[in-house]
Length: 177
Ligand SMILES: *[C@@H]1O[C@H](CO)[C@@H](O)[C@H](O)[C@H]1NC(C)=O
Ligand SMILES: *[C@@H]1O[C@H](CO)[C@@H](O)[C@H](O)[C@H]1NC(C)=O
Ligand SMILES: *[C@@H]1O[C@H](CO)[C@@H](O)[C@H](O)[C@H]1NC(C)=O
Ligand SMILES: *[C@@H]1O[C@H](CO)[C@@H](O)[C@H](O)[C@H]1NC(C)=O
Ligand SMILES: *[C@@H]1O[C@H](CO)[C@@H](O)[C@H](O)[C@H]1NC(C)=O
Ligand SMILES: [Cu+2]
Image 1 (cartoon, rainbow, N blue to C red):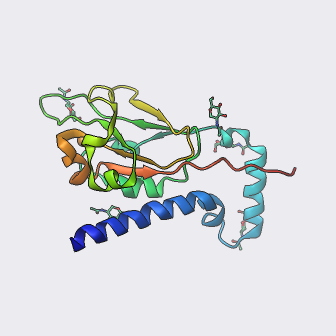
Image 2: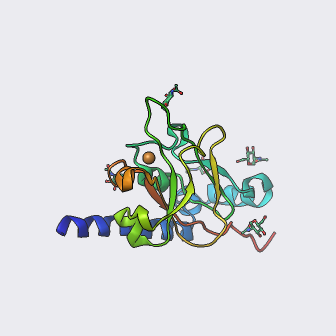
């Protein structure tokens, strides 16, 4: 019970800090330190560089893709912030003789995410949909998203660390020239 609670607390703190990091825009506050000329050049770049404001295609796990035993919580934490209309791309091979199948599920709330209650989750992509270009999911709403692999009745989610949460933020908007 105590470990369950501390796991809940840790996960909650991670999700909450991702949320606040989204709100604070990590790029601004952590990236620039106390160097104001650097801060100013970033500001001007953001303003003038339209390409930087386009939604990103983000490959979940980077070159690792979507597989058993990779820390996706850690990955999600390090690859933020996420913005509205960014696309998450889940890449995994279809089931074959030597590999276990994976899939993509979405939980509707934090508690089912925490407990890897995949029975109550919605399947977004089947084991065959991660091949080739991968399964694309657009973060189109301003809400926390809870993802996991649904295989083996939550085993991949619980023991394989195939779970993570993201909270997309609004793109920086610059009100003056
Ligand atoms: C501040 O950032 C600017 C631009 O990146 C750089 O040229 C300058 O050397 C930096 N100054 C310090 C004290 O780090
Ligand atoms: C704008 O941002 C893109 C993506 O970060 C970068 O590749 C490009 O060089 C930037 N262009 C300018 C003019 O800074
Ligand atoms: C995964 O990464 C998170 C965040 O860095 C860390 O708190 C957690 O302990 C890691 N999980 C495992 C099983 O290593
Ligand atoms: C996201 O894309 C949709 C459809 O292209 C668009 O209507 C919406 O304004 C976009 N939202 C943001 C925050 O860019
Ligand atoms: C089966 O999947 C594994 C792991 O994704 C991959 O390395 C391997 O090439 C695949 N084998 C076949 C026959 O497609
Ligand atoms: Cu899996």
